[in-house]
Length: 485
Image 1 (tube, rainbow, N blue to C red):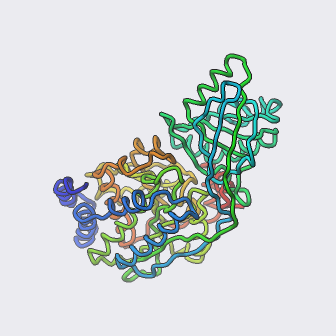
Image 2: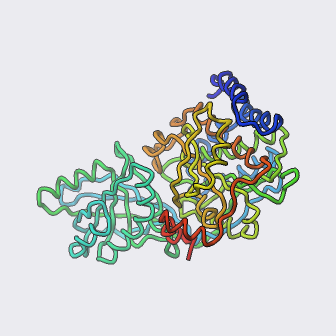
Image 3: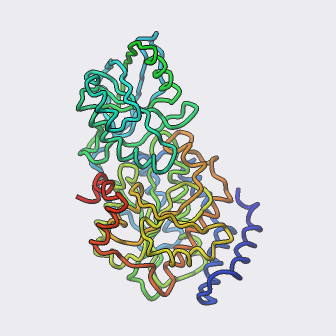
């Protein structure tokens, strides 16, 4: 798919060398070689196809997830990485999706298009209840209607178009489920934020033990939600029957897949580059996040194929359990806490396969000069933006809480959010040239951080982390995810 773009992209890779920030001729040449290798011989589309087409959904603990762990470990060994291993961690419970049926029994048993959220309980037989619309599901919405929720089925329609809205919903939803459950609701329905009857899924509650939601929770096609709202608008009772048969199982062991390129003279200093290997289970997770995993593997392959040995060790990590609340990356940081002073940076790719725009610095304005220098060799690709927003919604979060410089690739997300966590998150949504540019950006930036004479920034002190977290409100997200007490 990418061969048609090779000649043009190789020309760009050569052109930028004449205008890039000068370090040394050798270092500058090596960055260009990494970019050229990705465009000329990159295997990222093959990795993406393996994960999304051949393996498919990779819900943590599923057969697909276990196969993905095995295949990625084997590929790291084939690439020639060293210290390849799978680092285990405990998942508090397993979960298996069962059938989910919803019908409007007050209106001729009309069926609704629904799917369970992951790690939510079943109904233990059919249940019935009148629908109570709690609006966007914010705290004041629930409080206003609390007296009507006993024995009812609550329905919420949160906004979810922008990244900020998605992150808000990620941390608001478990509280919403808890609030309506405590008010006596028997189930929670949440409107899909997708069009054309696409359904969305994700865990509801990643803070409880064993991480099971407070009550049965279903995503409902937006078109069906607007139908229910119209019926309610006629001032008539709308009554539903739900029958959901999910299965909860015992705790189990999952693994992060890890491999390294050892540094040539500062091998004890580590640059982590990662993406999450797991997905949700309605679709194959091509953009979220087989694309990131393919980019991490290709960065490793390209640097290794060129025989480059950067100053510092590059550690490539494919995290499991991200969708359940960054469980794998939290486990990684706990396992490697004595290395955090020596962890120079953590780079994460988790916004699909779109064109790279720059980097999220996660609240670190002190890194601007270094980030601009890293982007200079990539300015021909339009990689120039620094976004200072901080959030804890992917595997950078535990590194950020440790004060380690952490960057998330900022990408064009136009193709990402319309299919995020849906059955439509498939390989055909990938623009090969944009994806190749993102992969080249990740590979070149990783190599530069690992090979530059100076470290990128520094590790923040505990007091500085606390202040940054309070200033950006990310501390609340860390607590919800179990990163902070």
